[in-house]
Image (cartoon, rainbow, N blue to C red; front, side, top):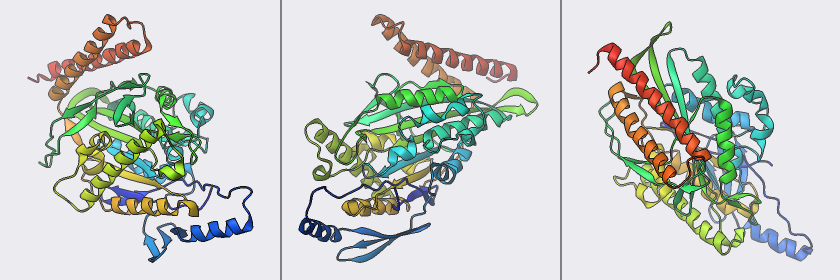
Length: 449
């Protein structure tokens, strides 16, 4: 491990980012001195990293010369990446501002490590957190835990400390594989995207209509439940071994945290007000870009690679259009960009984690990754707190209750009434109907029409 370029994209207009680096170890066994010299000459023709510093990276590009990138480093550890990239977003999330953190880079450069952590890290290091479910991200003693478990810990800790509101937390975990979205919490069952209309923000600005996941949300009341959801989802995610990465992710993974905060009249009065805040955090582990000749893929894996590269190309086109302030942004070109539309150019505080390798063998890919980060850093998002009245919340809850009941009725007809998924639907239905009763009682007590 060592010396790789890391960078970031615009967070509400301010560039911020990080990355976890992996140096691919080169050198073929058994080659003679003449072969080594020829290989070294070939490598020198490729772009290479000259220096990395806290706020800039310099690459030597053959035929052009030194190329400077001004992308901030977030630190040398998983804790640093959390503190510098995720913590500012979580703070705003708990005040009603939606956010997104995306990891982008070549396959094997450390994206999944940065977002999810090392394989088995949650199982090995979460004991101190699960015992009592308190202490926030600081309670994690394991050095290899990624952003997702640390963010979950911080969200629950802040919700526990906040006496001004009642907070409910729900999560979704999906993968986008071969241009189809699959619910990782339902044995990989395919899930669609639901189209939602445009919204008018408090400032008067009208947002573009967007797509949301049709996969049911899972209510979590403790950190241990949230970590269990993450573990179950990761176990279902599609991955294969390639020449470049022993555990190469063959899909884009999206972990979504939904936070609903019902405000109290005061700290000493638990009467709810007609003031509800909604915020969402997307944590996105993008599949790595690859070249066919270096990854050694063929057959089914070749088709996977084509789908990955195609969706990443669509993402790049959206970033380019946003950076140029074009009137048309091609969000509809892929499932990935449709789902990430709010994070890319909507009402969202977004951070991009760029991961790269300093190995000469991957110089061209590293140059492309840093260029992507540089373009993304010029994109500005505009964030506002999303508030909603109790009346509108009741309408939305009633619609969601009807959908959950429809799913349960279909499962009963299909003979799946005793399954784990059916029990999760039952649990969610109890939570939704409980929220409806509370809001109805509040409106009755306040005399709302």
